[in-house]
Amino acid sequence: MPHHTPLIGTIVAGLVVAFIMGAIAHRLKLSPLVGYLVAGIIVGPFTPGFVANAGLANELAEIGVILLMFGVGLHFSLRDLLSVKNIAVPGAIGQIAVATLMGMGLAHYMGWPLMGGLVFGLALSVASTVVLLRALQGANLVETRRGRIAVGWLIVEDLVMVLALVLLPALAGVMNNADASGGAAALLAPLFSTMLKVAGFVALMLVVGRRVIPWALHWVVHSGSRELFRLAVLAIALGVAFGAAVAFDVSFALGAFFAGMILGETPLSRRATEETLPLRDAFAVLFFVSVGMLFNPSVLVEQPLPLLATVAIIIVGKSIAAFAIVRAFGHPGDTALTIAASLAQIGEFSFILASLGTGLGVLPAEARDLILAGAIVSILLNPLIFSVIVRGNKREEEAEKAPEQPRMGHVILVGYGRVGKLIGERLTERKVHFVVMEADSDRAEEAEEAGLSVVRGSALEDRHLLAAGICEARRMLIAVPEGFEGGAIHEHARHLNPNLQVIARAHSDAEVVHLEGLGVPHVVMGERELAAKMLTLCGAG
Image 1 (cartoon, helix red, strand yellow):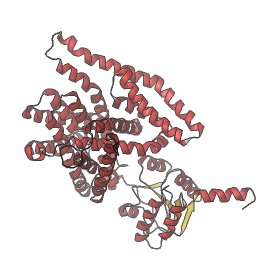
Image 2 (tube, helix red, strand yellow; image 1 turned 180 degrees about the vertical axis):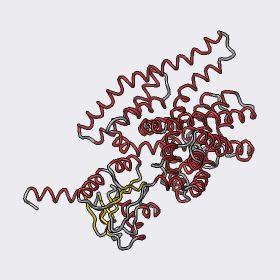
Image 3 (tube, helix red, strand yellow; image 1 turned 45 degrees about the vertical axis):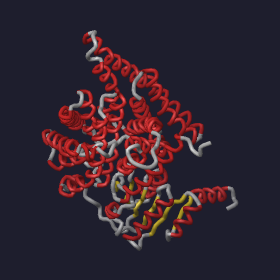
Image 4 (spheres, one colour; image 1 turned 180 degrees about the horizontal axis):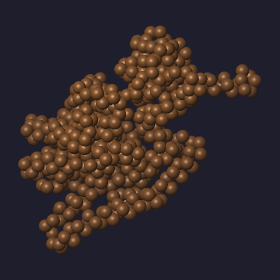
């Protein structure tokens, strides 16, 4: 009997190699996506050594697509889109059109069919959510006007790509039957049929799903079982996606997106995001690995000029289009340059489109290889491009910043989750001057809405600590739930301010020992404090 099955071997090899390559990419200050794609190339059929089962990897990737699209739906913000709709909607559609036409032009030159050129152009037109948000957060631009435009622009791109994923199978059917008899009605029938099915699914989700899904989750919440809540969220994501495919013959992607979007409207959306994040991340990694397995590195040698043209469309072509559109709408050059730099890369949706196109038989293998190579190159270059643009254009950021209150002897509160929010309320009541540090955009926005001074970014980065006034601070309260992360934050903070008084949170005895070993003077373990309080109340304290 073999020691492993192909399924186990594929999962283990994919995750282990992805971890190693992702860690190397992180060490080199690159996007982990690059590491995951390289991991797929390593375990793929075009490189020597272990070869993972491509068929199983693709099936696992389908789950990754469902969970990725579910996450996109969870984070979909109609409010963010409406705040910048006048530039984001026409801008994104115009930029997608220009980039798609450029991609179709290259495809025509390469002799690919029209449908293949359309898929190729669409894949080059859409930027990566992960890469864009990381660039904006790293430059502290998420909360600025240009950051909001970039995020809104990306929301429109995502919506267009969701529509494309729904319509491409029908369009492929129309193109494949173009030579068949029956006239225009016979050719367009599949397209209209798909639109009717999508309309039926959307109507069902808006009428029934908006009532049933929140009701089911609230019932689970009141059961008090965290495990059951986590299972319910995953069941909704996977069940709605599968049901949409079976009952309405629409893509997994659309079903998962709508499930996430409806869940995102409920007060439980943040908890749903937190509970399912580890599993979503794991399957997303397997998706990127499966995409890397499809990549044939020989394209780098055999087609250098088409690859150069592909990269030029991604980095230069669509960036120029975005810059011209933003300027045409009367926005300043700083904003136009930031948007252009933000979009000078491709990622998740490009891979999904490439996989769909090859699966439908309309996208040539060499086109898929050019998309993957273009993604890797653009993701590698984007941080450099973005940093050059941001360094050279600080005027708008400075104009948008409110005058800073003088900081001296203030408190820095790291983390604005459940515990951090309670601490913030008490500090406000006592009129203590403090600054919140929060990397999560939703929580940071919640703190800003409460009227607090907020620095968006990780407390593990010196520039964010300096922005929070670490050198002048008197105390730091580390309210993040992970004790080991708290220890790393303590070391960074004390390096910049040796006199800083630190109070950290811990969840276990091991975390307490770790934090005390690092010299954290005050460690609060929730379970111990609860036990002490209960003993005091019962008179046994």
